[in-house]
Length: 138
Image (cartoon, rainbow, N blue to C red):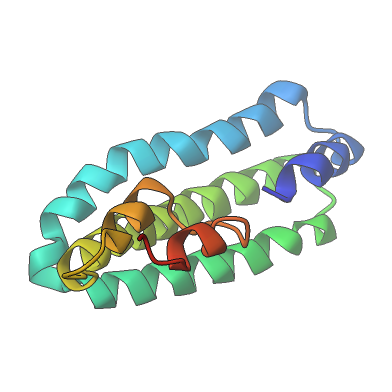
């Protein structure tokens, strides 16, 4: 995550404590942990592709908004908006991650190879994983 090296420095410039900006990072994982089972249960009704697209859009938008937080000088406003943006971003992340596994499991079937299992075992989060998931298994 690119936010980790820069956000604490910026938060301390604004007057936030290490506990406050640590909780901003921690709330993300807590929300993903709580939201993923709910979203997984609702995927059939809402549609995996729709949830995936909405999750990607939400996560991207929140990443841009998070990058604009340096415009707020009040520490309470800065930390408050950080929490709100990270919670919404976590919901989007949970949506696209949960639905991506469903899409792969549903549509990523390959009769002669186990590429589907390779993608599930190594989700393509960075370019490092792409060669491992795209090469055919002999």
